[in-house]
Length: 354
Image (cartoon, rainbow, N blue to C red; front, side, top):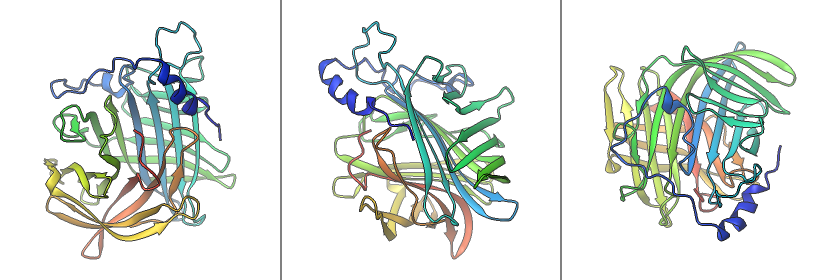
């Protein structure tokens, strides 16, 4: 694991520099592809986020996460030094293996440049050392990440159109217009490749969900974190639901989208979303109590979310600064499994500084 000094260093340096003029996120900016698959370096923050379920040839279920983050820190950008950290890149990779019983993960971070950390503007191509996520000319995503405990070498094939979140990609994160991000998803990705565990490569297949999001505004002052879920439904549909929580634990903002099996999309207003904790798991490392089993109300759906395993906490204080729970879950309706995806729980180990 690579420790990243700039995370703490930048906090001190930012006090001596006016923040950059981050461009606002507004509803009148249409998305353009393939350009918007690439990096948007003027904005404050950005991420490419892949989560999914895999199955080995022996039938073992696995969950996986591959995330690349980009940050434009609040530093004096007139500094002519090539070593000035004008863009920072981070990455998290995780494997949820019930046979292990706890999340296996690694994280990396580096300033952009010098051939060590790069993000392309014309399409998805993000790299830190030998960790890489790229999209090829045929639209296939390739992810390869090597850690001390496991290796992911996966190809992800989109079989559905992009799902633009919010209003054609303008996704509100609060009551104020500038509390928003540009956000699209690629659900129902068909995955094939290999996972190496204990030094042995295994063929895997599965499904995954990709989010790409970029924004300039920080999390609202009233908010502490969020509950998010992305589900690939067994009928071919897809569901994203988000709840941002305030300091009392109640809903500050919410939203989502439901792509039905016929391809029609239902955008979900804040009052159409509800997360009800059913069971909590307390981390033995951070004492954070996460609602790892939830009842989700989204539009006309009521789904019970159950984790593949409880211990799916990721401590990224060495890179992005957050401790969060990112876990593979099944979605059940009337006792029957109707989908699989990932549940993300932030702000339970302390307010998220986003």
